[in-house]
Image: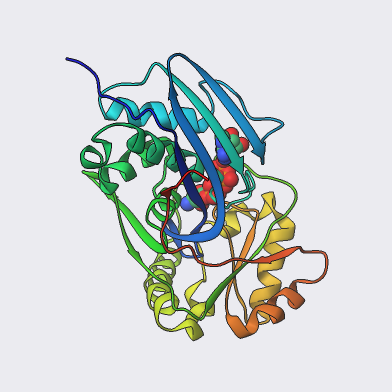
Length: 304
Ligand SMILES: Nc1ncnc2c1ncn2[C@@H]1O[C@H](COP(=O)(O)OP(=O)(O)O)[C@@H](O)[C@H]1O
Ligand SMILES: N[C@@H](CCOP(=O)(O)O)C(=O)O
């Protein structure tokens, strides 16, 4: 049987950074943030060329191991076959290995670009199927769900694979990130987790995760109790002591601070009028960035 046909014109894809877990929602909650990687992909007659600007330009592979390429190939295969060659141009802004979903963004860029480049791809690979392809590559659904769908997502997995629902945070919620200079790989951070946790701790997390859905979407005044976690942050603290210390300090002053994803970035979810307070509370040694919530998730943009 003949393989699929491909568009000759390049596609430009924009993918947001994401913060996973948000405290109690380990491997479930994700929040899309207004910080983006842009990837342009064109089908070529042969070969593979990769141009990278920004994050990772000095150290990323320019071959089949590049994560965008792996995601492109996985998605083309899911759609019936690969094109003979690819030209890829990456403008990377999301820092790598900081807990802001750079790997999820690279994967979603490849998935969305391959779908857009395949004639009939959008009809044959809907968002639920795209989530399945992306999760298989990432290993957990939380970041890729928020990256694909935008907003605040809750992901879960059953015998049919990963699923996610999306909502928008309350308009008063302002994410502020404190990004350390030193990376920590998600794989290493996952290796620090125990195989079992006490029932009482799990029960606390379940209650706080349920509360966070209400706090984030309707009751920002409840964000501090709603972001308490007992499942992952303490176990990982030794790999990111300054970040763990900052979370404790900010929470002690009433700010809803958590480790973003697997760390070491610290995320504070505050109301708009408390942005300056939380930045001041962190101290001058921490570079702080206020980000918007991204509402739309990964998308195909006009070529500029
Ligand atoms: N834009 C990108 N292009 C290619 N590979 C990427 C890109 N972003 C991230 N990666 C790969 O993912 C790794 C970081 O993934 P991970 O440890 O999960 O951290 P993060 O929290 O940033 O997702 C990088 O070291 C790199 O191998
Ligand atoms: N639930 C995952 C989230 C990892 O996010 P990342 O941005 O650090 O890749 C985990 O906590 O391991």
